[in-house]
Length: 447
Image (cartoon, rainbow, N blue to C red):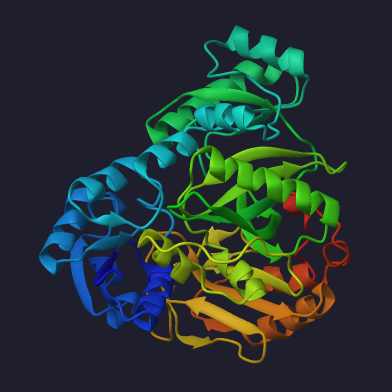
């Protein structure tokens, strides 16, 4: 087992990893920018190293600075969390070259799944269903239009190096193709320094359902059931739940087998998610694989009653997986609490938190790095807390979440709590009748 782990991340996920490490008697090192010096992950780590100014490029994305922190603290492993360098194959490779264990998959695995075209080809060879589309990158507007005409409109243009909804454009008819292709390329180039674009059939009213998988160094891969992540705004997840209200036994079995095929196709090591689009006829298609721990991993943890970070660390240390696939028998829902104003187009709301009270009670969990008096910096993601509720049934879980949201008090900044309150009361949501476009016409006026 590792002696000391450096967490190459910030905020709630860094604190989450620190807690598990302490329970495993592993020393921890926090890294932080000058904007994060008052964050709880800095306070509760055994050691902390400042790695630069607020800009991510000069701190959390600076591989030389993070590796310098590894060297001066004698850490023998690095946990990347999610975001930042978590899916950076070069970073994983440098760690390996210097004898530092990167807690995650190998650089080759990251590269295979990080490039959407390569990932799609790998899944086709593994027998995993994929969305119809181009065999590779679009070479020209004309070739893209020919492919779109062949598979039928609407289509979606995607950046091959994309993520978080960037470099994506829906094209409803041929006359729009050239304009949307140019916009997708420009955004992809600005976001990922790669303007490669491919085209797929756009699945209307789909569910976004992902399977949590974990693989060890012996070649064993299991799944820990699904999460429904269909409540999204601009391709950004806001609510996740397990099990999916859309799922049945037959579909779970088929998708679970496909997720394991996906993992075994690349000899996957560590925790990760295989993400699918599922149409209203319950046909599913591989979308992408995230080769890291997910923001929403606590949903699965609450259902399986197990620490996924602990399993991730154990697998990285070479320990074998014990047990098999998991079928949920309780329900869990996670609401992402962001420092955003839901009544003003979800505009970010950084600033000082004057009052903070998190809900308590049976089946209620809050993962957060903030507190009363903490100042939310404007430089990073707006996530400030994750509220997770667990109950015997989905109906009970929604009722518990309503109660917990009523207890959640954050003053000094705007948050998404009012949005979540309104969502929990929505008739269609309560009946499980929603898809990824559900929030396009969502009315917040009730709040």
